[in-house]
Length: 565
Image (cartoon, helix red, strand yellow):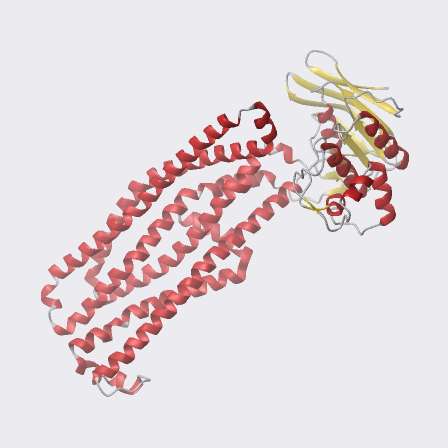
């Protein structure tokens, strides 16, 4: 546990230094304040039992800041001080709770941002990520569990401080109480060990069911239309309902296991008080010892919620700490070697794929040999699954060849050499919430009316611009129903053209358009971007001239080969 705690504090709490220092400082101050407020009960009891002891006390007479003439006045004054102390303690406690949630959320947000930065900047992301659901699970479930775990760590730290001070005060007042502390600790440990494995199993099942719920939710969102048309929505919802009920049952079970120890610990502490009273009766009944006994009882009573808070948050921490390890295991694979990355921003002559071989497995091999000259217009075709995507991934550096070299003006494309040359448009473009202009330019370029006019004309967006009236103000919703599939593809192409790519890849990016519209757009792109190398992937037969036609054909049973003409 200490090892994990140290790891968390060392690696995370520097994300928000100011809040971290404030939290730790306030925790120490509140712990001392709580302890002092507990001790302050001593004068009350003493005044009631032996008022003269206080009234004649040298330190009270000479150093007490307020004046008093009798025990009643002193009681009122001390009561007021006691009330103020508890109000301050309660206020700081509220501040600390807010600070815990704020600090853990801030740290979690920075963890998530760093996580996405590594993904987006990782040129070989495919090597470490098997599927999208893995990323979604890390970014949602695991990181949310980390947030819960961080909150638990902070609460545990605060509880430990208070409990340590309470125990030290008890030992100072009554050294024999150490035996009682030991008994309570043993009983607490037994309760903890009994619950540990049960909770671990519950949380493990809960996480698995949560993943299934997330997968179904994602599936419904992505395939809503298909679910309606195929009339299989009821079956999907039935499965979702089953998993949600299972999750609810586990959550209730976890809640019960988390709550019953509180009652058990209260029973233990109350029993401990009664045992102490029984064995110390003769000492207690003497007037001079009643005050001390009152403090002991009060400390034990105050320890109950603190001890339970410690227990509850420790259980939470123990249940969700696995998310730290899952996250770090995944993140470690995303971390590139500490080497300077060289970015290739331009090429002047050609790209050569020299004896390129790539193997997914023994039954799925690819061989590519070709030369792509600067400014060439290339048509890439092949049956579905022939390897067009593999070719494009190799060319862009997303995957590395098993054998052979990819040369940009004679320079090898390696892990430490990445390119900013490519502009890629897929078959299924994405839009985000924002204006039409923001979707096209990512709001990264200064608005150029002449450039915008040309790009809108090339992509056939003039009608859309008119429909939206003002491209700077009217918002487009995610998966906007106002736009057809073809219109979204036009916007996606315009977006890439705004970036002025040196190599433009159109991967079935006009599939939602009719044949005539597709030809018009492609011809205009070829006409106006003469110096841009353009690679068009298309299943349709295109009846206009390209500089080269690449076709991926089956060389033998296990190998696909690139031909050029």
